Image 1 (cartoon, rainbow, N blue to C red):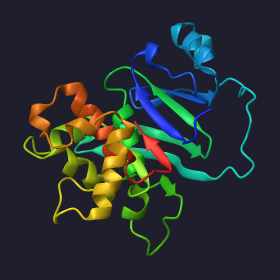
Image 2: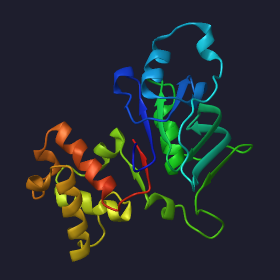
Image 3: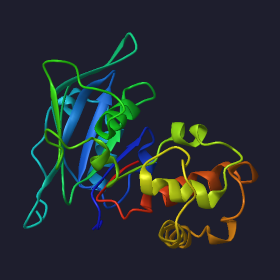
Image 4: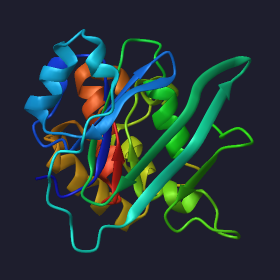
Length: 233
């Protein structure tokens, strides 16, 4: 069981976490398979090449939280990035208690789907995306501040000379960099997140002094610094 709902994108079958509850497979921006399943079943499905895999299968039984709440829902969502039509007619609903694995080869649209949920890309006219608590007059920033987002592009956006402590503290504002010096409360929250991911000893180093793997762990600490309600990985 995972205490936090999450959506995890990967193209490697062996990366499928054991606590997953749902699988969505993408191919060229379209849903190839979607449904509730367990990790062992998902790995077995992803090994198959038969046409039967393309058919929607009955949802596997699972425990539903008493107060399951929809956190984000896409309906008939088309997404264009620059001049490219990346996602086609996506239907997806993520609720509390859900742990989705989004699987597909490179270029299938996994990262675009997560960035659309987060708000980096818009859904074209004719489709929709609804986020919990985001109604008229409430800025998208409110959703971002309670959503953890970890992705390779974020690693390249941060200045290499930025201190690890500042990178993690910036997660409290869902910003790239900081406009003002961090507060004492920011520092306490950042220190707690750094300890959680085994990075406290690196807090005074810069990103340029870290290995690629250490820098990725810093992004996880940054994403968790606000104790998020949903994780996009």
